[in-house]
Image 1 (cartoon, rainbow, N blue to C red):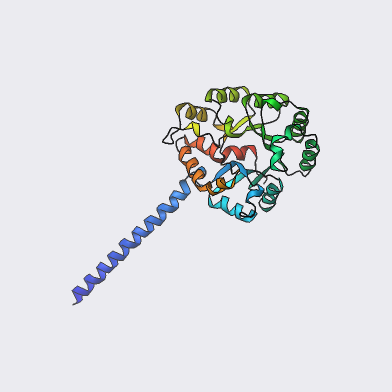
Image 2: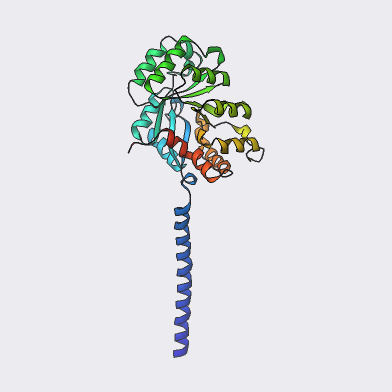
Length: 291
């Protein structure tokens, strides 16, 4: 009986120790994974978030910040039509929201802002608040790239030492840069459908040009693999690209988790330092947090 009891106690002890060891190793491994996993894999910074009035009824400012957190988006460049949406988010989370001023008071301004004589006074008033880090996103194409209003606004941007975010063709981007060479320009969607050769030439020619990559689906093959030319360009100019999800309509907000997952998937195809920069480091360099 004594031998049986002793054997039973030994077995129970061994089983307990074995299970405890397995649990300990699992917990330790998980904590080690969190420790050694690079920051880009956990948190992203986004260069193209819209908070327009068509989603205000469904997404309050608190919900937007929570939604970004759920999708592990740490900081974001935010635009709004009207700009009150941007200001609400900035007021709620100034460390995470990088506010840009869109020139669209209402949606129809998208088609007329570049020649609207009331626009300079509006922009001057908004910039006087001191919160805006950039001007845009705006849509501008070669037919209107050099209007009197555009020249006035570009001078304001230069005077306030803020950036641009321009949804524009290559000719217009060149005109804006040459108009005010000291202004840094974010090329929204990286030219959308301009060939990779154009993008390479522009990055080589203009050192203050950055490319935001939302809707640049032609960088990938049908399996979601980066095309060789694009992968080479991203690696070579790793400090000049930023991510973007572009929540310009409610459906893009609904699809945010899928778009974030896809971004992580293609970032994983790059070298560690490159994916860290594009995933978030470049935005942190462009807009350093105040300590």
